[in-house]
Length: 215
Length: 286
Ligand SMILES: Nc1ncnc2c1ncn2[C@@H]1O[C@H](COP(=O)(O)OP(=O)(O)OP(=O)(O)O)[C@@H](O)[C@H]1O
Ligand SMILES: [Mg+2]
Image (cartoon, each protein chain N blue to C red):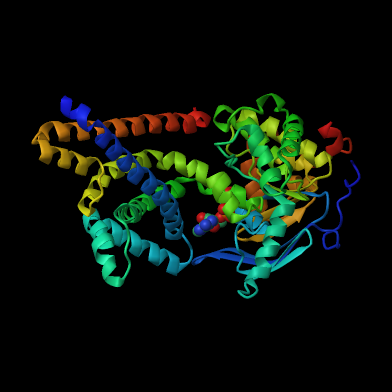
């Protein structure tokens, strides 16, 4: 227990880094994912093709390789990125590939009649997306998006491979300096679990809120 | 407001809808095979016809929800030549203009489920007409009151009956302050006992002089409210005429067969049609 007390500030800082990685990549991933999802259902062949290729590549390769490509690979092309931004970039690109599919499914689930009602009023495209389609699509997509957020939180542990001191790396460091691996990793695991339980609760609350109109 | 109860003759310039030579196919299926139709200001036109005859397709071509393959759609002063791929941008502007000036009421209501009744009616004024929220909501409240649903303003569609949903949808259509309202079988998805409340709202709308195109099989409504019945079959207008003439003495055998089907459960209409004491649609409405 004294391990936890002594290393508490380090662990707390590491938990902050994990949260930073997870939340920032999730938010950016949602924005990118929504755009890719829209491109995916676009009438424009080129956009659609690019979106399909994007999803295929980033979903079909290991996240660890993507992270290492950004951090270790890009410098060969003269692009140097700090560890944390590297991790965020890779996590965002990776999450966006999955999230775009969730958004796409949500958008297709919106009844055709909804689009037609909005079209028949002459509502501009982006306004229709924001006011009519998005609120209904998000309700459908929320459960898989929530799962994706939780998975992403755990995936941030791979950032340890590019020297980011987040929860996993911090636990490893504490473990190796004290030989109390068991405690160190259990504490890290508990921290992930805590974060993800909070996310689950938040998701549940949001689902109830969005479901109110349908009760 | 009862100034426009004399429908103009088809073809005169004051016609919010003027359609000619309209063709539409879905793949190999030719659904509209050259339809001409003119609707005068203040006129109520009922479109009837067997299932699959192209009624829905025709009415959806009027606001370009369906893109015709050939023909001219001139609605509220905006004319769209169909079939020529050029001038896309110009066309998009005109389509938007037409949609601003018309409104559509759907068979399946298509209310926005995430918005309250008030939110549904206020959405067009807010999003399309760019009214300030307070004004949009005031307008929405007036319209909900007009369709008899002032007390349901805060309800979500899921909590409304079918008849109430359709009345909200009509209020939503009116909130665009359209020149024409297009109805596609507005009562077909409703239980029979809910038809009356929706038809009553439409009746009042007609009385107020609204130009309406109504796809419906409600014979009573056609007889009492409409100025003209258009009978479609196989993608063409087979017959049209004043409701009392058409409904009691259809000329075409297919129209006769069709009317026997839809009027099946109505009390027998005298073969001589309407008597001289038949009330006009205005008297009926009040
Ligand atoms: N989007 C579409 N794609 C393919 N075929 C279609 C489409 N819309 C309509 N059709 C076909 O076109 C024909 C005419 O359809 P339409 O909906 O206009 O008929 P309708 O007169 O409204 O019939 P109903 O009384 O059943 O509503 C039908 O055979 C229908 O299957
Ligand atoms: Mg139809």
